[in-house]
Amino acid sequence: MKRVIVFLLPIMLLIALCSCELSYQAPAVGKMHILVYGNDYSYGNKVYYESGELVEKAQAGKLYKTVNDALQVGRVLSNLAEKANLEYETHYITEVSDTYKTVLVSELEAIASSSSAADMTIIYYSGHGFGVKDKLNYGTDTASCSYLVPRDPAHPDSSVLFPVSEFLELVDSIKGVKVVLGDFCYSGSLVQSGFFSVTSGEYNLFDSSTLLIGDKIRESSSLFCLSAARYNELSYEFTSPSDPLHGKFTNALLKALGWDEENQKLTAAAAEKNGRITLFEVSKYVTAHDGESRQTPMVSGGSNDIVLFSF
Picture 1 (cartoon, rainbow, N blue to C red):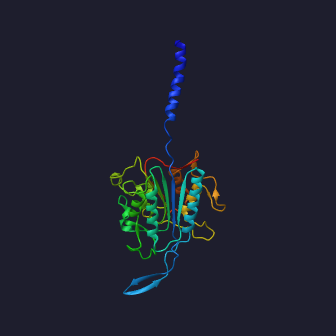
Picture 2 (cartoon, one colour):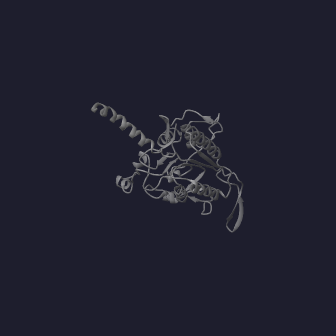
Picture 3 (tube, rainbow, N blue to C red):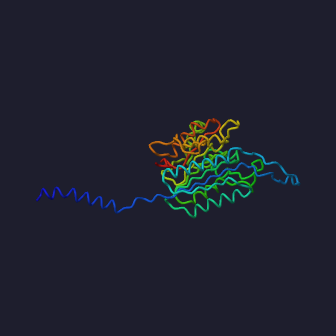
């Protein structure tokens, strides 16, 4: 009898454990929201008021690769979401005008209202950025003195600038995990004050007491950012007609994510490791392969990496 009991106990324990395990549902996999924006500033001349007279000037600061940047990033993210068997929706903002800010704000608010805590939102921006250079110093809130620029960057004023701080507030109102990818000048301002990620070369410019006061690493976060450049740097496009039709950061980003642009399909992703693409692996790849020494990508969001796609 004792032998029977000893034999039955492990079986009963196994049944109990299995029953208990089956009583819990696996965590719900949320939806992925993808929002990509590209502005080439080619929507005509603008009228300005100067020296008491109205004058018309040609649109300055035209960018030639930004719309294609957004289109291709949107396509690779959509294909990756499909490959990962995720429910997703992709929003493109590539036909823009002076209503740029209104359109972008509207899209962000729509995602915020429909998102859930289980969702992930990836936002990509390619366009002009503007920064108040004398205020872009380490340890300051650079998001409050850096801007997304919807119109002619040669004439920045309050009516055409969108503070990065306001943009991030809108993004942070979205439920779930948010990832912002920025290919614009001074895009390092996406990295939140007090959570800076900078290169060793930049650290060498500061006294250790200046660096450590107020600096910290987030153990957890719902907002992750990867920028093309540091908060005080410009970002660059390829300029030769024979070069890729992208900004240098975005060109590396597409390779990191595994996009075959010529055939419009996924290929081996340089950032994929063990069947996963993580933000830190993407960051490492674009930093090493953007081909531009004048810009250095920055990443922030937490001490732990985040999985973007798992296959």
